[in-house]
Length: 238
Image 1 (cartoon, rainbow, N blue to C red):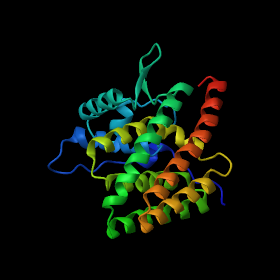
Image 2 (cartoon, rainbow, N blue to C red):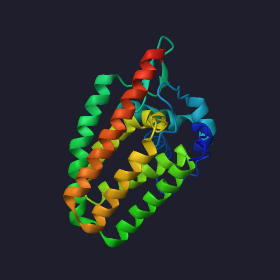
Image 3 (cartoon, helix red, strand yellow):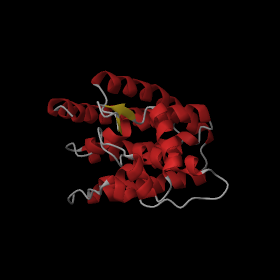
Image 4 (cartoon, rainbow, N blue to C red):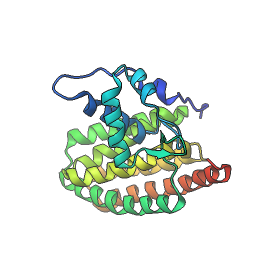
């Protein structure tokens, strides 16, 4: 495996091209939410209103509203005497809670997905896994995390349960920044790809039990690495 190729989260965010028919606030919110889920920013990192507006190339007003919404969602928090907005640093209890919720909800979503997934959707899922495989071989954590979320999201979306999908996304929003550091754990890529390979095969075989088992193992293995990462943060006092 080659050396990890990681970029600063702000440089990955880049200018936002606004689309017609949707408010600037909604598009900024979606962009930042996806960035947090995909691990663009590290736990404890300050998210400045003016810097965000400057990087996205937008005015501060829609950015302010988007950041408030993300704070309401639990993706950001107000912290310290200066009341800066930052990416939360989870406690061990919160991490355990998120893991248990993910095991139940994502296992359920995977089971539902088997009933509805189409051949075309499986091809998209397989493409996401292939990109993950290349990123793992290159040690490219940035591309790996983006494709990891895409892989899981594509599976769960096929269940056709938007409320369930929203709750799952909420859990990923909270844990995404920590996952960014967990991928550096020894053998993380190898263990993770083994689960993703089995999940894709289960989709092709229409095997709900095997798909659920692969998803649960992926979450459990990641939780172990996340716990180690969080312990390191706590020891440093971040």
